[in-house]
Image (cartoon, rainbow, N blue to C red; front, side, top):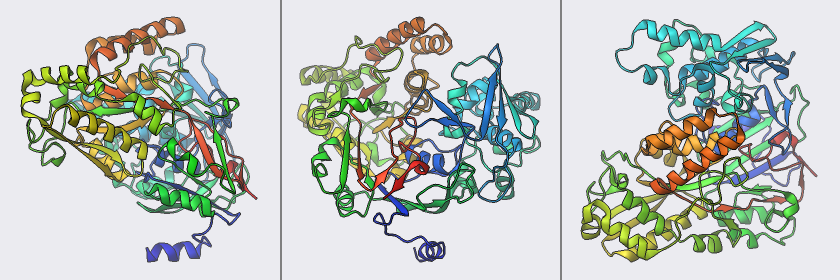
Length: 583
């Protein structure tokens, strides 16, 4: 702590400061997991990365369909859709002082394809550029030959090619109409290759690439350090406390208005609200809509609420769910008690469809909408926002019904669950009161069904929450998904396919769903895609892999001194810091 204070003082940054027109302070409850754009796959990390690093193109303001050049100035797509060629911006410098050129683009994309950590979003680039999903070791399996590895390397090496210092070409293995939008995701942001190599990262060569396949990038320099081209430079990250950034005075797009940005992690919502009222924070995250009355009408606070002002045109693109793991890591895991029915649950507890249906019927959707979403919520039928292609409002949903829940629980595990009982924990990230409410609703209703059912509700720090999820130690957890790229595939494949991000974590797999998903993600006819997604949605209802939570209606609370903000649902923070100013 002392070292951090000394460092910030030396840089002229104080901890004030929301009242200071040169400092923007944001308080939230989720800690950053990593500062590496390839490793990151959470919104807290993404917000920092999107402001310090840059991609070739970015979203234009609040639009998800209009784009503007960043590190590229133009691009062309070949007629067959297999080649994308970008002209790069000249005269750009990284925060280290190194000059930006094509070699940095080539290195950054190939680094993502080489490492492709299993809990990252690098798969988004891996699929179109290599035809693979997982890292090379996983794809090739044990006993793979050098020749097989050489073949994968050749594909990676050919995926991103510098035609000259200011021109880069991407070579796809198959046409992918979503490729350009995938390149807007922060895994494709450009890192300083010279700086990365000098600090122990992969050296970019064929001779060493196999040493970095599938590594956890949290063990490397880019975990805690950043050298991007963005409008802001990292000053410090103190895990669990704050991130501090300062403006890049030499930013190619012009120095931003606000000199300093401080992201503070404050788990207690009451403390966040008090900070906003007092002017000690410019904006804060509210864990639930039900907290809005505490800030509405307060002096100096602006509330923008799409539920009360439809002209904002905001709709939620987040899909939240209760995830029931079918492959729980039972090693020394207190989350599942004795690892058997009665005083715990077995590691494959949720493989029984009757358990999953019981839990679905036990969730009181109306209570959640009325008490947590303050009446402004919408039930969704499938893991897809209602505004996306393929959403089918006619897919059935599980309505709250304790009689049906009891009926399903009595069938689970051949009747043993009802007779012997269970113990498990529901986990949520500390500070998120809406997710806590979900867990409490399920606990109350399941324990009401049977006195032998015991549920603990546990809030844990965001970084620990992610770590336990990664290691399959959470039997039931509550988390949400926001899109990486604007296509239904980014939801449907993620939630339901065996190789999807969430399915791979929970152990859910269904060959019929996989077959439909594969058809839909390669189908060019929108009408046919929509029909396929409807079929998949109905199948997912029958399999009940998750408890889908109603969508909320977006809102923003902000101090009146701040201007220039907007809401782009594709950005982790909703807006870019460079667009903000303060009176």
